[in-house]
Amino acid sequence: HYPSLADWKQTLLHHGYQEPDSDDEDHTALIASLSPILNMASYGQPQYQWFKGVVKDPEAYFKQEKVFRNMWDAAQATDADTAELKKIPFQQFLRWTQSSVQKKKVFPLLGNLTGYLLAADFVYAGRVARPSVEDVGRVIARMRLGSLQGLIALGQPLTVKSKADDIVPSFKYVHDALEKAFTAEERDWMVFDPIMVEHALCKYSRMFGGDHGGSD
Image (tube, rainbow, N blue to C red):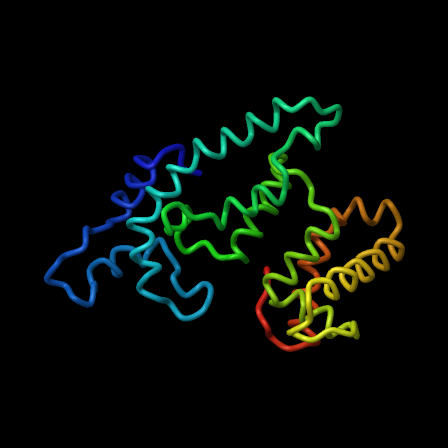
């Protein structure tokens, strides 16, 4: 956790970060200075844009802190009688992660999958409202990654080109079947919810349906 942009920059400097040199066309020094603290191959083949992103993108991210606080304050100010309704709506948060201003993404390099995972983290942190089964089903339809492959591997009548109107009820069918299969105590123990089921489908697809990516 970095309270401010200055704290983030100080961490980079502490670990030996070197400013890019205009004479170093391959950016060898920059990459070497970041490699000890950043695993650029953690999600596959490293790309130079990730190294550049570490240098320039945090400023854009920290600028969004005020937007988040405004969303939270607005949610807290609503005239709702339950704590869940006083949280930022899931879909609103998700749209924010993918929004743009003057054709520039407010969160550079943050795609649909990472935006969804960030929303899920904030759900468990108590700041974003829990999504419905339908909400997560539509996320699966939009991403078309491992969780969709998991549904297909389970025998649901879907393809990678299926429409959201077909994917959502299939996800609900699997979710509800699993919900009935476990006791209340078991569901509490595993934190059973639509997010957990989506994640489990990704794992299932890796084990039985091939490696198609997903939210793991």
